[in-house]
View (tube, rainbow, N blue to C red):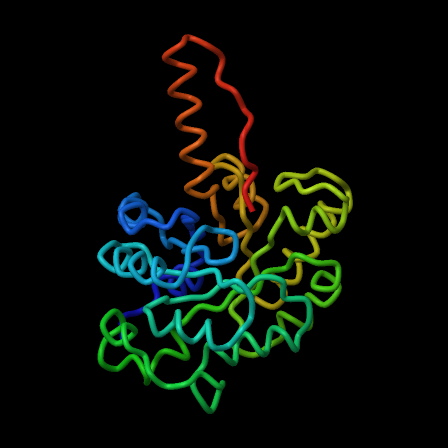
Length: 263
């Protein structure tokens, strides 16, 4: 089976830089996959992407060096299994607040006896290789999103779930629930404390600590703080930012900073 290079990077203590796709386009996926990202995530939760579009995007990513990941809409096992069968090499699952939810998520990603994933790898065989069924349980990456007070309170129990590779902070949702304002780069004391708690627990459990960021500079700061899986904005944010900069330069104006904060 094709090795999951993200797991190799973690073992070698190299940070993972993850691209993020919210626009349903195989062409966009192909472009991002060739830019140097370690992985690219197809977002089926807040992105404008359905399964048919996700399939073509995963196919496009398969022809690039980037590892194809997906963010699912929720922890529904059938959809998780379908996207793994479509060739996703890892799953980011939102709104995980308890160890039981984390276990349900991981179980959907693992074949028996480690889990309950139904057999029918389809594109998994094409991308991963003929021995995919024998090694998928080890190679498929699983990240649970921490976005709620309950998830933060249960972080140690969530990270203790066997087969869970790590967690991924949804900073806007977490900030919204802790401070009343959605801010991916919040400096509110409650948010700073929450982030440090997640980082500390991931270090102790030797699990992946991931987070969504608003820019490359913000991602660099998160890596310096201890995160080893960072997403420096998504395609929508990057497209908007690049357009504003180009227009401002053409008009010899100051570059505006307004725009979507990401999710």
